[in-house]
Image (cartoon, rainbow, N blue to C red):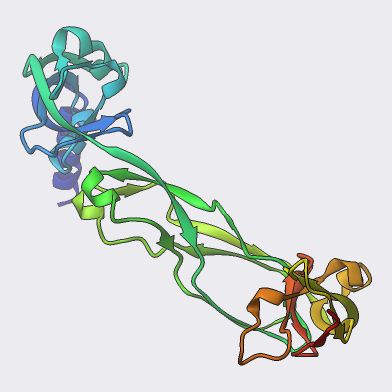
Length: 300
């Protein structure tokens, strides 16, 4: 039995060491297709390649469905098709095999690849999050996404309905440190319809710091008072309660805010002015007035 097995093995190795000429069917794999075009899938896009090589080089083609690449950047193009010809493309096919593989023939002589025109669109990303912070901590600025938009390629009728792409939900609890985390995108289910996306995930970053609350006295301005009217109002200054990070706290001053009362908002039901914060510094996350009304009297 041992000698029989060795003889069989020697026979197989001998046959694999002999050069054979055989024809195999290769599925065409398009590469270098412009983003603005999509190749319409066609099961007839196969190529028969006759080659001469050692048997062990051809053995794998009996067990797998082989593929051959065609670079569409080298092809001629009509209004409806990319055109591959053996005359121009033979060398590009032969170069994909080892030096000891000799490509004898390729059929068919000409192959047509139908294509359609794609639309290309940049779509913004939107973070879907549910984040809680340790008491006394908060996010300093808005979250940054890198990238903040992605390229979507596909039929225009489908791209028109995609106005933004959300991330999968980012859920974090009791956060008191900076956030830096990759998160997958919740891509629309249109990939089977010829739509592709340039990215499948994005990097979420956010600065988290200790926050504190402060109060500052801000002057009140009354606007839109008619020229023939003069008023006196009280209080002249109003406390503003603001919420900001410790690192920005000292930079906040009364001039950082503008509080106004609009005289035009008066009506018969109102005998007082309503103050509003019309400007606050970007470092302040939130602000509110400690006084809700301003009394006034007509002087003339």
